[in-house]
Image: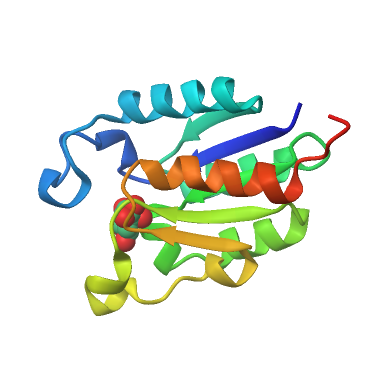
Length: 148
Ligand code: DQA
């Protein structure tokens, strides 16, 4: 079975409370449940994690090496600042899809830069929570192996 890690960066634990006009009213727990249900329905294993700390996210990505087959990452604000996350994804060489709940292309100038993008096989932005499910499907369809 294909093993995916869905990794969320800072403030995404506040989903449901945080700027509902931008991120909606569904909670982080709702997101985790949605991902687990989709994993069950599509026959993949998905672990879901969140951290407010850049170093924790780097460590999680390093830990995936030799253990996981794909990464779905919403680095949140670290998208726009973190060379360390980019280097981690490049370092492990695991197929990675970048996800953003909001359409960052239509937001502030400082959100127009994404460091992780150059290491991602796909970027999905502005599709809400469903973007995570699309990312999982993309990894399964393109990097899942029939023999698994
Ligand atoms: C976000 C967009 C980022 O710019 C922001 O810092 C976030 C969430 C999104 O999912 O739309 O925290 O990654």
